[in-house]
Image (tube, rainbow over the protein chains, first blue to last red):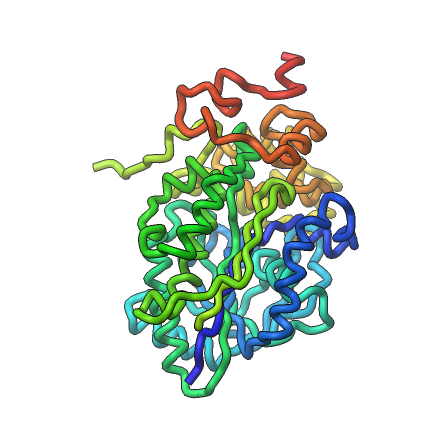
Length: 284
Length: 145
């Protein structure tokens, strides 16, 4: 039986990808941020998963306004890094896990979550920046990745509650897969940031840290926070944080198991326009 | 019965909802086309002619030519789509975001280095934070005005 052993949470700021691609990670502006992921890179080596289920959002890359799926699961054998307007990032292609992805799609849809199944899509910085932060810049990513894209571009995005419950369905799906795979689930995006209008540049450290506290200790309560609180307190793009609740919903304690162990927590301001938050939780 | 839109009283913020998306469909799809290198080259070689290939309003075209992102957003643009114009111009996301505040690039970068814009006074219309309408434009543009 497959098992979720850990969840990882991290921001996925495009400028972090640019800093990696342009060799700027040791510069004074970026060094403190990358130091916060040193532990994580070692942890990834010590706890290498068989598959990463990676929750992220597409930033008008694979999905234009032609189609706007709320939840899209990538079932392809591989996914190319997208050209987001600057040319494709020089990172390895992403190898999928079609067997597990299709199994999850079938299970989760039968569990009342209407996923869109995607057999062809390019993946943008939302997916590749977290891989760099956790794995560095290898010639090939350490394991297959199932991309799971959530619409947070066009309002209304799914509620925190819906995301939290979806995470629980994903856990049931993974645990009903026969092969004994070690699976990580990652929630990415956030933390507080606003990229538009005269309010651009909004950061709310207090709210972000309270979000981290609540995500660890009381995700059920956190999942009831309405969209408007994210917008007012964490900026219009801070709404990406609902995606973290998918990963958190997939942890064992939500279904009566033991509490997860917090093995790493990091917070840093700024990365370009954004507050960066990062957590690693292990299932006991 | 009208739709619930509890986000209309957030200062300096336009939520990209179904109505904005409908207004901005052609503008945003034009932006999307700039994800291909050959289209970026064609746009740069003749912006007006390239824009005329799209079913955008004249005002949307003017807003793009002026690179006025706040104006584009009022006309239904979404920042993730508009970012393709900035990418075509070789601008970073920070330069694009800063351009909507009136601050110079340096002023905006300094604000971020100091921990960003505070939510205080900027949660609801009618407070006195720096994102409120009566305090625009901010920074360098505000001093010139």
